[in-house]
Image 1 (cartoon, rainbow, N blue to C red):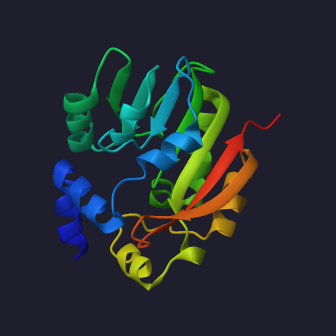
Image 2: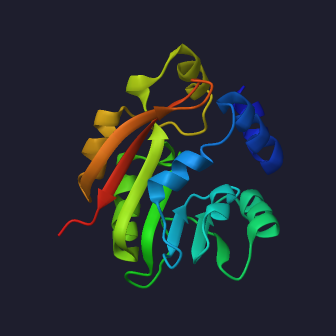
Length: 198
């Protein structure tokens, strides 16, 4: 089953369509209200996938992902003067200090070990001036259906909200945490809104 899912993820349009069916749509409205980007803000999207969330922003947007198929799709569909996509491992990426106002990481933290996440968070911290927002699966709020789905996820470092907070607080001050569910109630996600540690 995992091999089949891996094959599906290689076809960006199909992968995104299946996710939309399972979730009863996308999280675009929720993410847009979470990030609350002003027109002149610059945004970094870590592990951006197919770049879907780039369509929310009018200012500078940079999406980074290690999956070439997804980045190629994002470039073809969403690339513009203001929107750029980079095919590279986020652990290897470098930007000048305070290059972005905000950064976000959606459904990606569970693909990295604690040690790798800490390294990524420290990099992100140097890139941004305002805040960092994480959205990821929350094991402590998962229903039976989500638990079954997560067994076939490509990410193997699934965490509860408590574990997410413990991990993130090693690098960032946490301003706010909460949960929300997909329209079909099939998926429960946790949100962690971070600010820079002084």
